[in-house]
Image (cartoon, rainbow, N blue to C red):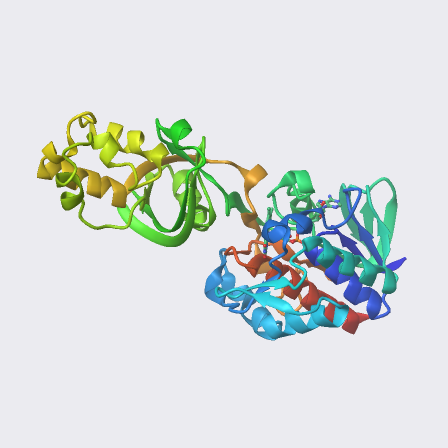
Length: 401
Ligand SMILES: Cc1cc2nc3c(=O)[nH]c(=O)nc-3n(C[C@H](O)[C@H](O)[C@H](O)COP(=O)(O)OP(=O)(O)OC[C@H]3O[C@@H](n4cnc5c(N)ncnc54)[C@H](O)[C@@H]3O)c2cc1C
């Protein structure tokens, strides 16, 4: 009989097991992969952007984000920074946008430290254990290859994103069995597919520090500044990931979704073209933008590329200027949960106590991390929620033992 069984050895599950073990609770961590923390290794481009200096409620999404208001106040940036500092993750590298990383800039070292801590906290770890069911009768029984008994259970199985790392929505089933509701899941922080006949030619072109806008049914919805990447299927890069949540929700409602990409910051081209009477229009574009983009831009405008640039009429120049400052392409899809970093939706927070993460429907049952209907922006917000929710749950369980 365990005091606590944690199902899922991802970010939140590992931390919950460490905290419980250190508090003297007999703790079992069950993970379906052959090792813990597979996804953690991929976070922050393998550098593990584990929190953010500017943790704010506005950076989180879900049907009831107020659920985490007190949680992120209680376990704020300094708390999380200090918690991992005490475990040995020293010095933090904070970029201008508040992103915090271990000083090593290696997610693998972050995971190593968590694994040392699990050993030191005497957490019993069983890997290759895919949990299929959970029941309650006086105590909990957790069913995998074997059956395990416990007074308390934390479900830390993650969302639907990147199923190859283990999180495939399996945990929703256990919680629904106890009467919990799930909110429709959609990928967030994901790449977008564009209707772009020139996608193959433009593949690999990266625009740095540019503006990308999202339009739904022709109306401006949001703008992001940062890097943008044209790909063979459409678009990627931080700007696209940040806009993707809203784009995917609108696509799901069958609305017309478009991206407007600033290929070149505005500014007139009149004097450039008028001075180039020796060069064709196509040649006059060389040196202005990435070469791979010249033909796609001109093709879209149906101009004669072979004419001397200086012969171009004012309207033609205007058309090029507009297309360069707002290259519009229709969004026709996304790359799915397989490539998304986080899941929009999950188990409704309505039936959980926001102070303890305990189910209001079943005493002793807790849910933490991405399995719940909370997702954050890119920048350390998702891992921060994983840590904070694990802290709250274990704090509450300690009180009961
Ligand atoms: C490529 C990528 C990069 C990211 N970068 C960042 C970043 O830099 N900063 C940030 O804040 N967030 C980032 N995220 C998001 C972040 O990784 C997740 O939000 C976070 O890991 C969620 O933690 P979790 O503990 O809830 O779930 P997970 O970390 O997904 O862990 C869930 C665990 O449960 C296990 N499991 C699932 N079902 C079962 C079952 N039935 N039985 C047993 N075990 C089970 C899984 O194998 C997995 O190990 C990134 C995500 C991805 C995919």
